[in-house]
Amino acid sequence: MSLSEPTAPPSPNVDDPESSSAYENGAIRECNGKICIFVDGYWVRYYAPPANTMAEKKALIFSLRRRVFHHTEQGINSPGWRLEIARKYYEQEQDPARKRVKAAMLAGSLFNRATDIFSGVVELEEKGIHIDQDNALMKQCEACFVEALELGKQVKHFSGEEGVDELWGEPFKAFSFPMDRFFESRYIKLAQTFKAIDCIIDRMLEVFSVVEGFDGVLPMLEELREASKTEVETMRRDEVIYEVWPRYVASKEAIANFKPCGLSSHEDRLRYWEDGLRLLHMGKDVISHLSGVRVPMPVTTANYMANCDRYEKNGSLDSEFSIPDQCFKS
Image (tube, rainbow, N blue to C red; front, side, top):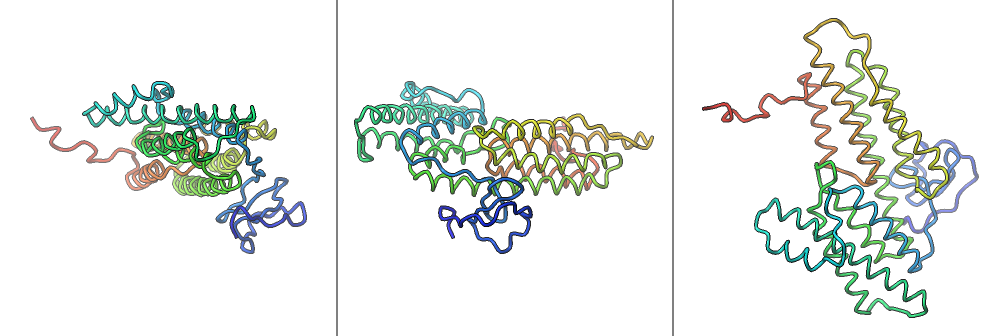
């Protein structure tokens, strides 16, 4: 069953979302007081898609634009009216590192140009002037979205660890797809984000369950898991955000403020505990990144898992050969 053809909700107040083996993707039911949709093993808070109108598409695209620039590197929100200037500097650049940044700036201009055009088309529609998909303006808008999507592969998340090109694909989907299909694709990404959060929290629990003095952080990690997933699935316009967001922030602050207690007096273990705290805070930050972008971040996740492995093996986050030997030769 496709997500765009959900089943009707069964009887209300079904409080066991874990008993999901009998459900197919797209099933909708009440879970723990909220309406959820079943996607790839997860129950995700469900919102009915808005009407498939140009005005609703405009509102969605503008919301996605704010999200893209909020979660990506600084300095790339170049206005649409400077598109030709951004392209000139990008095409003239020869240095690979600088060309990547100029590609990001060009992507920003293309994205803004596309939204400028689409906004104008919607204004014309509201005045009774219909613009069909074959119109030159719509074709130019689509071309800008497509090129921005391609260049967006070179744009980095603000953490600097990896690109989040999936964020750049969402505005194009919102432009191209009917609303129900767009929301279908979003639920799939949300379920994938849930899975990434689970993998990271599970690994953190494995690591810190055997580190002296860190037993107090284990329930905090479980709370972060649930608070993060709830934040990921909740739309800002939903009134419940006034409960969801404070819980999420408080769960992160609890981990940020955590101090291990009951440590032994062995000074030779100090570095082990200090690096344990570093690893804990790194994991919190990765969860925060995932919760913000609401799409998987495989490189960032893999890097964190490697740090967990290193700490578990060596009792430290530093690799013995992190600096090449030749750096120490005269």
